[in-house]
Length: 392
Image (cartoon, rainbow, N blue to C red; front, side, top):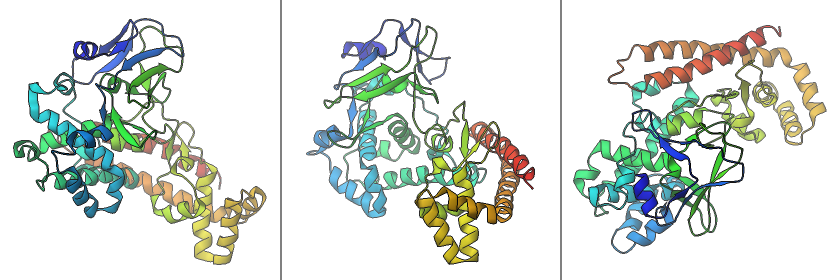
């Protein structure tokens, strides 16, 4: 694959190499020191898969617009995923060409087994807490919509390819897990072979960028020492669950996790909070302030609508004095509600983990990453439970 990339314009710093421990999951390593600010890799646009370019490439020969209209009719929000859909179509078209595809060396190098939400079964979802199950199911549902749109037959793709579930899932996972999104000059999704071999880290040492001609650059954002893997950020490090659902791995070094209060989404939206504000600290169990806010708001809404409105205004206006008065007056109630939530999640996670561990790994290869996710939740929530118990 690297020889193919170099032959077609790929450039890299001397000492940067592909690395694998014998499976089909590659990473990038350096055997030389790389100073911060260095352009480590350059991937020219002729190697890059672009969702915009796919429209131009297939516009006259493929009924792409007809297929996309069918997709949008299934679910309005899927219009946001059209760039991803176009990447899927491109990968399927190239896969169909086999060794005659320009991208064959790259496609042949890609992993065929994935552990993300797209690849999970209903049995997997049953072993996940609600938030993780929801995100994972959303990924699989989007895949199902894409699959249905393609199988309507508007695209001149070989039915032997489109009717093969394993090929369809492979192509979708390649598109989903390897794209980077840009917004200038237009919003599009891009895959840069070679750069896509760089793995995630909560403390990345490199970043991937594209110029307006879709040329890709990998730049060191910290000094990288010989023997180190190159790493980029694939998502918000404060909440590992979306990474788990999309990519199928649990990132190491998670300092925080979402409080799992998915049942309070109306309160979250009302206060204008994001999930990355609603966290528990993984090493101490500490509860972030916004978590206390959403639990108190639910209590006030159930008790007195006027008080709930006053508290909401205080939160939205960053009126800390008023918020503190509310929290002081209703602390016992908020503490009890939060404690009940934490113990409920702990009980559910233990049951789910026991269920997952009863599965046969041959038929459920995703059990280890599911159990790892649940153990992170259990360990964090156990600390949070102890902390809440000590408060009264």
